[in-house]
Length: 273
Image 1 (cartoon, helix red, strand yellow):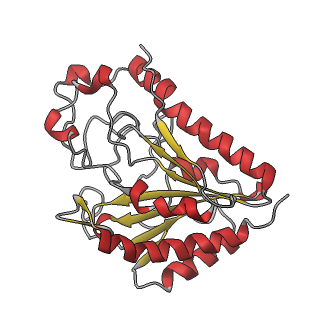
Image 2: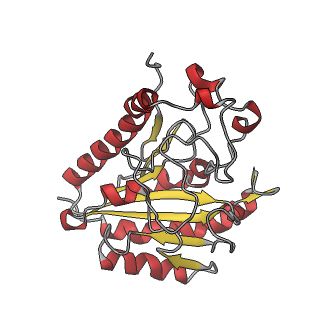
């Protein structure tokens, strides 16, 4: 049965609107009532694969004229940044959780019993109820922005623990800009964003070990002046207590770099149609 709950939250700009849409697809922590009891309770109280508190970290963006959309449900319900056909985004041996994950990044089972793991029909239901509405809304907002602005940018925000051995043996760099090797945004926009990030005190990598997920790859269309970028950041840049608590002092520090970066993007979307 379809639940009467919108799987996303939209926060409209509180100042003059720009041509930027900020997407946060992995910050959700809710579980639909109909399936909540199927998951291990000790894991879903604090689902570890969550891009925790990013909606709080980026809450300044609406004051810059940026529209925000973020997920309400956990990525363990369905991963909004995976291919709807569950095609792998990487083929280098790392652990990649599926469209409807059955394990976390550490390979631990997240369901109480294998019988609760989603069937093909259940996956189709979750696509219909949670995944498609998020992507449809992304497309709608980008289309509306494109009617107003010559250039539109989608900024897909993510975060991850500093160390995830099942993905790579070494700690992650502070910031990773992804654009599928320059396919999802123009060289000029990428160059300007990298310039700002690399002038910061943070260690910045480009397209490695993450080159952007399904959202970035499917929404970016530079030939139509719709550009998509993903920024992955380590959680310890804005969290403390073993990357479990929001740290206001740390957050203010990284926010300065984020504000400078988004300001650079705003300059590209200033021209209205």
